[in-house]
Amino acid sequence: MLSKNNNNTYSKISTGEREVIKLQADFSQRSCRMTLSVEYTRIDGMPLHLHIIEPEQKKGEMNNYPLILFIQGSGWMKQDLGVQLAQLSKFSSRGYVIAVVEYRPSSVAPFPAQIEDAKTAIRYMVKHASTYHADPNHIILWGDSSGGHTAIMAGFTYAKHEFEEDNLVDEKSIKAIIDYYAPTDISEISLMADPELYLAPDSLIGMWLGGVSIIDHPDKVIPTIPMNYLSPDKQVPPVFIIHGSVDTMVPFYQSELLFRALNDLGKDTVCYKLEGADHGGSAFWTEEIFDLIEEFLSKYI
Image 1 (cartoon, rainbow, N blue to C red):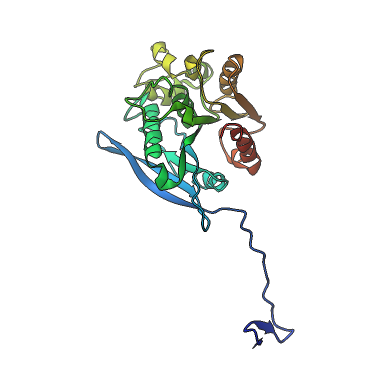
Image 2: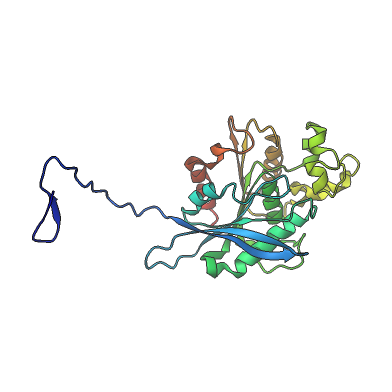
């Protein structure tokens, strides 16, 4: 039984009853909110969407946060935008607005449609930055696997405006690229891969290139290689690279190719080899990895 005190609080009377347990509120963490399926463009009747994650605004705050465009990997086919939402929300709570980008699958539109769509998504988010409390002057491109390739290509070609019809964003606003185990030279992958997966016209890569075999059309591979857009006098965003040591889909040396090219040209980059990790998985989404990403980003935003 409880008894009411003079100050209108309650205290426990019987020692045999359970007591209320007091907890100290922790206000150091932020929750997030999501706005799902925001249509950012429509191409030939096909709508393309964003899932947008925002850190909460605490009472009295009107913060704008760095903007991350995350491009979900899918072998350049139809994406499942929800795959990494839970993990990305954890990172968003550190103080980032994250827009997960849907692009046209290669079965509908081959290369370079995915890069064009990523750039359209960037322009949309810049235009609507205030709606989602994003800072349009601090943009980060992030992607995993094929989405990582798209993020790299969008970042490396932004200054020259390849693969886009118009540009409303200053390339200096793109502060960094986060590359999770992206393919960087598909001709090299194909040399040691299952032909049915990569070499045939109806394979993932064959479809991405327009339904052709890369053996018969090596010319179509050249514009897909990010390293071909690097030069000593060309500025590109700093690149954070992480890749599993036992990746069975995209071998680790694919990241080494990019890292060495950037390093040789004196570009800002860092590369982590995640020992024992395959192609994706929970090991890439730990707080320790997030700390490494934030340490890298803190130099540029």
